[in-house]
Image 1 (cartoon, one colour):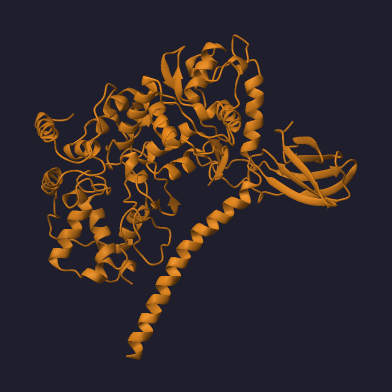
Image 2 (tube, helix red, strand yellow):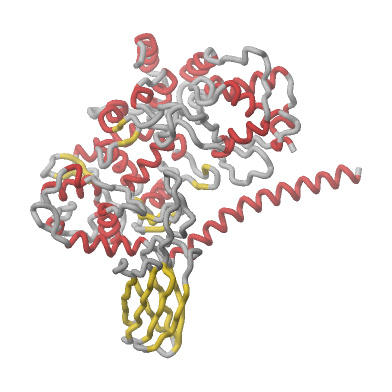
Length: 103
Length: 205
Length: 267
């Protein structure tokens, strides 16, 4: 189970803005350690955001996304109190799901 | 450790009630006592070196912001005596190497290897070439240093001395005493001289 | 005549371009900081720290909720802005990290080595200390810096810190004052706070700890001081030692009245 995320979802007018902070090393596989050996790649490869049961964002991440990624996106059709859930999966098969209510 | 003669002269100066704001003495430990107790040697950054404060460091610690003309003169005179000009009389090396020395901030840190070559880190404090826009402002701009002053014997000697021991000219200068403290080798100083004074150097374009 | 005028105009344009390039670099850095401020990863350390504070640990299997940070056992809100301070139970002045070590050893029963383990985290090794500090300091956000100096030992700590601030030594003859005692200075393009200028001191002190983008970690004041001394060409200070507490007291007192804004975000 990956590290906990921080999710904030706020409604303004008819648009919900979601901000997600993820704790992940996002190793590209190109860095070398002090001894000169390559540090193996380990990064989030997919992220799915749901509003209740509906997928509102399906994203492929890659090694160009930096460590401890911050994601911000907007969608329409959400109401205060609704659940927004985020799930990420990484190249090692590890995943993490967290949710927050729209305020 | 501080030699008896240096301590005596420093104490004499402090006793004459030299003007300039001094750090007040109090009941607590001295700064060096705190360093001795709570710091550990690591790599080239040794406890012994810091504890072996010389006269300039002692006086500049005691009177950090300003000091009397007498103390300033005392420091500048003693520092002038330390300057060693190049034995072969050749002042200029290669500006390309000088630029490398100016760009490198490594050397003498607890994270550096013992015996590894030191950089001068000149760009940390000075503007030098036109192209390098990442420069500090703790020291004056050295852009067009040679262009504005020429290459006379006087300029060569002054510039050498300034790099070797800046406190020969300005007591308690913020600039490290690159030659006297053994931070840069004679060859490296010659290269930095070339960066400043060679007409072909990017500093003078 | 025309040649000279053209040359002069060219030189002026160049000079202006250089100044502009320099100003726009620092402006761009400021814009970058604003953009990043929205999603500060430090919040993840705060979350982890809060959990660690409330978790039973050590041979004594107690949580840190009984730790007295100066405002009473378990009181975290507002504690950081009153540190460093004198603690009667140890009869000495302690800063936050020294006090945390004390609570972890006396309350939880950890050894000194265990309590001071991994003060500076890395990709390979997470730091418990950095998370705890992130949480505790976040509970002082918005409050004014008010490190006390009423007690004689608090006054002494301030004076001791001042002595260290002005101490010139080592291969480069650097003191803290070499870089931090004048307005408007910078190393390369990194602006330097003048610790003797209250406004600068406030801005500097109230933004530590911080998530450092260049390191990908939350870094505490102990790390900042450790890194300063490294670049000063000084030997390494012992983690949470009295010397660093004294220096922290000097900095905290100079930052008095500053509104605490950390954990923040830095390059």
